[in-house]
Image: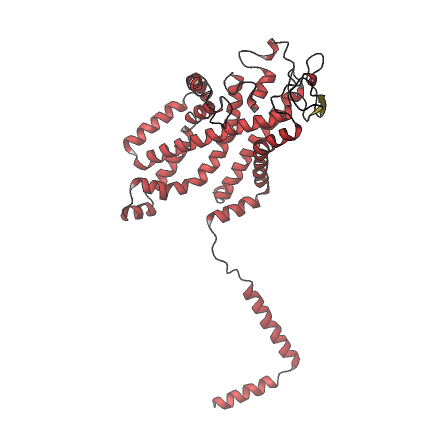
Length: 369
């Protein structure tokens, strides 16, 4: 019977019309195509998914590229451009001001006589910075490098201190948590700007001359002072995160395997804090740029002839104790106020927008909750 069925099937297949056989082949091909289009890729890591979501957010991604461009322009483009132009950011051009001591405007060619620069004409791309006639563009790049060194260094120091103390307070709890929480609450009750000025002069007098061969005079003292007084909010954020993680199953499993407390904090808890710390670190970086500019208006910060975005603004407007209006000999132009203000505004805005995009990329469900 099986032989007869097989013969009957073969006779049936042979009896199919050519059009029917072509339709059957096409149907089988479409099924195979749909099967091959099924996504059989392996699960991707969280960092890869975060990168894809951040790249899909074009606005935040463009802000990140802008931040990288500014950092590269300040740290790499400034020295290269100074070499190409033949003068530095502190080179004085007596011919870059008119008879009323007002600096020249953007894209001006001035004589380099009595300046110490290369003989001939010197190009000032953004004009002069004041009665001294220094290159505004090179000082903008040099000031950006100094401000970014202060902001990056102070932010890194604040993150280290805040993460360490917040993790200890949240993990151990009890008396340690109470003591550190009261210290942070007490310190957060004071205005940080005046706290830095009041206590910073004692540190600045010892660290102003220390440059480590990298920083300009005064930058290291700003890094230390701002970093020491800027860790309180970071510690509270880390403490809150650790409090929610210390009783999770993976922490209990690590204890059962014999892992010590510091190993649990370092290996199992800190990796979960990378996302929130990265987002908040971007905001702290932006806030430190503004804080450095504010300190310059209080006559505490990078001093002339070295440039920073903060003291470039205070050079135009003066400090709280010595406003420019009281010195008629110091004459500036509108351009010397616009460029550093635009630099600070654009960098701080880009930091804030990038931090928001990074937050959405790290936690895409947060906006739906």
